[in-house]
Image 1: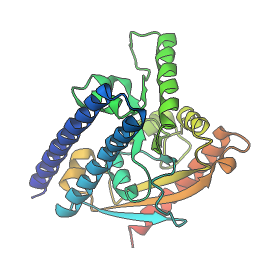
Image 2: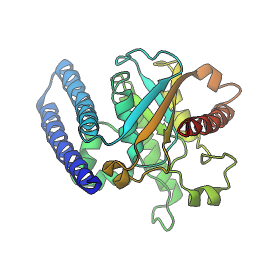
Image 3: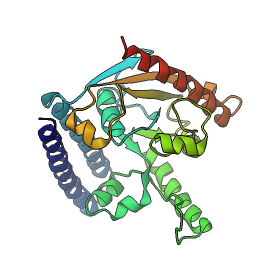
Length: 286
């Protein structure tokens, strides 16, 4: 039964991704031949809404297939803010995190976009669609990479300049996984992290995004994800092997995070998040 559920969920995701990609490509084609700036902005809005259409489809799928229960917890009342820019910071454990976050926050914030590996641009159809939807691309260092460090930095600088301009075009939610990679025990031991449940946070993406959106928002959304039991890989998530996930969200003022510096502010936030993970995990035991 669980394997059937997994294949059904995967098939649904593939079909809906293809449908959304086709719609976005048609809208992008319209943009090419549309001279009116006002109409182009409207079309851009429709393109961003296609992200939420896909997320709403995933929410329907999770409910129909009874895959997982998402419990959303807000420290403060989070009103619907689809017209307000948002910066979302979260811990990262599995590919399923993005789907869970999008569903949990769908009714509250603008479409979520996130920093994507530049290599994804070469993925047929999907890579181009992410570029058209203006997801920011970054080139990450890797062992044995042929590009020099200076060339990588140049490409990233260009991508960041493009991202800064795009962030201001329409209200958007920028999702940042500060750890830069999915948490697992092997990475945890290799890094010798000082946290119990987290890898060390990287500051660059947060600092850039706060600087880019400082005139658009005065806070960030600090989100903590905790799965019941063992964190599922993506296939186990689709099969419904994890029954519950808690999504804890709180607002943190940027001025509080920036004093005395972003680096120290993020480290303090990470200590609080580490304790919050322990607390949420303990609740599953009752």
